[in-house]
Amino acid sequence: MNELSDRVYTALRDGGLDAESVLELACLFEVWDVSTPATRELLDRSAADLTPPDLARLGKGLLVETRFEPSFALEPRLLSALEQALEVVERDVRARGITGAFRLITSDGGSLAWVEFQGGYRGSAGIRPPIFDGDIHVPLGEVADIVQETIMDLTGKVWPVCATHNRGLHVGWDQERTVWRCTGDGAHTVAPVGELP
Figure 1 (cartoon, one colour):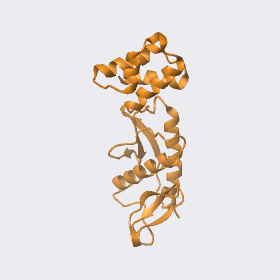
Figure 2 (cartoon, rainbow, N blue to C red; figure 1 turned 30 degrees about the horizontal axis):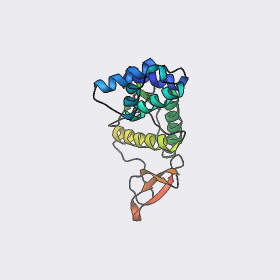
Figure 3 (cartoon, one colour; figure 1 turned 120 degrees about the vertical axis):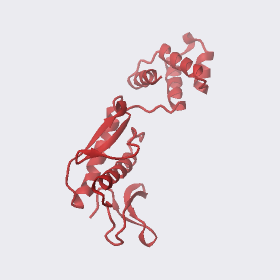
Figure 4 (cartoon, rainbow, N blue to C red; figure 1 turned 90 degrees about the horizontal axis):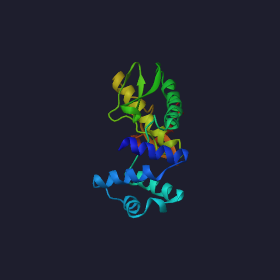
């Protein structure tokens, strides 16, 4: 099913979606008892009656209804967004005196990414390809979380720490910005991610 979903996604992205791929995916979902409005419409209509706009609408519907997410291998620009976010988070790492190389690695067929640091990586779940419509704050928050987790797992120390309250900071959002927040004194924003003093 993944290969067929990938094929439908790629055809939608690049143009040239054909009825055969969409119908095959709809049939496969029905065999697995996954009945959606898109599968029912596709199976109720004649393939000859499906126009290119119909195919595009129904193909998108199938992918949305089945919560399809493209892998980093299928959509490299998603990994590029995480790499840009890692550059921003690295400014905070360097500002707090931590040295060592960071890089993004992918595994599991390109469906997950991790941040490698000092030759190792941590993170319970990894990062899934972000669906963010160009909003840098979604991948920035995810990368900041996993960098924090990786540093703390590999060094055994809390990072970053609020200079005022000596507490570990957490990623949060403040007025549509990704920020480092402290829970001391009822919680406060320390700095935007990438701008730690």
